[in-house]
Image 1: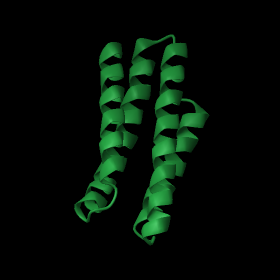
Image 2: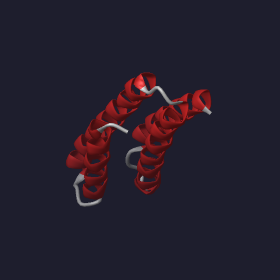
Image 3: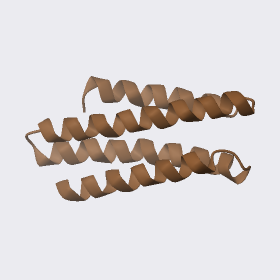
Length: 107
């Protein structure tokens, strides 16, 4: 996995940790930022997997990407239960499905 993708993991983790500490307006902005970061992560995984010569390493890139997407979805599930972030959760789940389908191509 490239350094860029690893850096994205840390940014996403930090952004998710800050969500519960925010008021409604800041929460919405942070959620939009998390969505953008997850989309960048997905796109970076596409590029990394295409460049990878070994199928197993490309699959590993998708496993790691799915792990981050799953973690984000789990954290947003509780916010969604409180009536916040339902739209973002849906989009993240769609992104997760797309990543899962990419993984299937490499297995």
